[in-house]
Amino acid sequence: MSFSPSNAVRAARDETPAEARSMSEIAGAIRVGEPGSFAALGNAFLTRLPAAPVPDPYLVGLSREMAESLGFDPIVATGAESNEFAAYFAGNPTRDWPGELLPYAAVYSGHQFGVWAGQLGDGRALTLGEVSAGERLEVQLKGAGRTPYSRMGDGRAVLRSSIREFLCSEAMHHLGIPTTRALTVIGSDLPVRRETIETAAIVTRVSPSFVRFGHFEHFYANDRIDHLRTLADHVIDRFHPHCRDADDPYLALLGEAVRSTADLMAQWQGVGFCHGVMNTDNMSILGLTIDYGPFGFMDAFNAHHICNHSDTQGRYSYGRQPQVAYWNLFCLAQALVPLFGENLPEEGRAERVVEEAQKVMERYKDRFGPALVAKMRAKLGLGIERDGDDKLANGLFEIMHANRTDFTLTFRNLSKLSKSDASHDAPVRDLFLDRAAFDAWAAQYRERLAHEPRDDAARAEAMNRVNPKYVLRNHLAEQAIRRAAEKDFSEVERLLDVLRHPYDEQPHYEAYAGLPPNWASDLEVSCSS
Ligand code: AMP
Ligand code: MG
Image 1 (tube, rainbow, N blue to C red):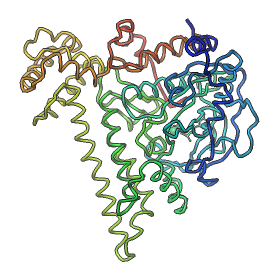
Image 2 (cartoon, protein in one colour; image 1 turned 135 degrees about the horizontal axis):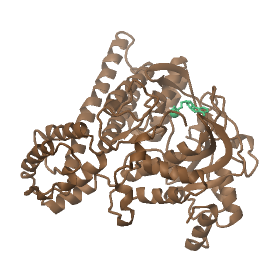
Image 3 (cartoon, helix red, strand yellow; image 1 turned 180 degrees about the horizontal axis):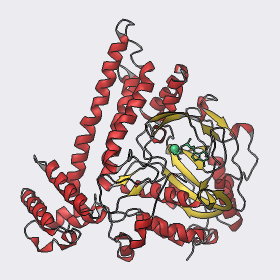
Image 4 (spheres, helix red, strand yellow; image 1 turned 120 degrees about the vertical axis):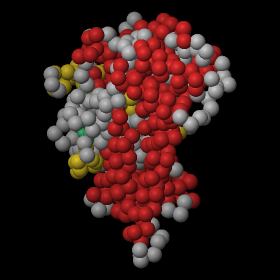
């Protein structure tokens, strides 16, 4: 079955005949410029403009869960409205945009590959506004045309990268990893030039905020401390109001970024996720995974894996991600310095401020290290804490690296090992070429498991809740993309369905949990998107 608009329409009609939200209701729920919103910060922060229309938009993928969370579900009841839905989320106005309701592109700057890049900004993203659905969520189109921040770019995104972003946003959410989300991907046959000619697509992204480290760097670099403060106040008021109770609310804000970023890194490392472009403009102030480009979930484990073909130096390799995040936090801290210690006496203020900021930065290591060890304990099924657990985990990573064993399968299959006898080791052991190395590690592991009160079944159950069976492997995304290029969107729909339950056994989807096929080793993912 292909996931064409008409199928979506039929499904929506079958499930929920009566209460479908019309497109005008959906559009009406997305409000721009409400008090307290990013848009209300004013013109120094953004430029308002309409999206550039695309010809004949069509629905490629839809996250019903996201739609539901936005209060958009049940959606689009009739054929005409389905077309309106695709048109609306392609950025083609289905109504006139009254001036004050125009969407906007935000300005930010950033460090790219360790070098100050100056002004960047939403070069191809337009935020439509906010939906209040319990939480206030911003709704943003990516790929909706040029903006004043497009520089040399065409303002577009291609179908390939849009499907990857759509699927991975939702997959990360279901893995329990903080992320921006995605509502839909809309395609158009509009040609887009990259290495070859591809076609355009627009992803609707959803997030409580799209504010990046680079937003703060922008106003710091331009010496607009007034705007810097406005932005920091916005983030504090909306997301961390308790920072107001701290001696220094802005230091407390940095502390929140340190904490959430450290936690995020432990989560990424724990599933073998590589972001690929950890520039400071791609770092969320809320510690969300943001800007899915040349990302990848590792198949064969390599501690130095580089998922981005354009990253020739391996700056953003798997093993370096936690360190790079720390470096990026320093850029953020630097940008926030003018706000620190406002209540301190002038005398000695600068020194005190640096001292205090350094203390906050130190917390990164105190947070990330234990968070990663806790993650590894859970992945190994260790319910109690013992000295040497980190060594045991590192020992596994070493032999995984030496044998290039599959990251996801190794951890998933580890739950099948028995505490007491080695005859059940095959599902993991067979992934290693060097069986002796695995046996030596497994002996230590079993020794450690002897201290665990849980039996094998209880341990396996707990492990399967933290070691996903299904992740968005490159070859899976590639298969969905190839079909979608032929206007068959069924694989996008199926993958989304598989990835909604990454920790469950889904026997009918067993093939999605397997090793990548040989052809997948040729897949390259670059910054081109
Ligand atoms: P990225 O590395 O994709 O996060 O993008 C870095 C910067 O380049 C951001 O300011 C993007 O908005 C901008 N950018 C990337 N691709 C395009 C494009 N095709 N058109 C306009 N701007 C783009
Ligand atoms: Mg970006």
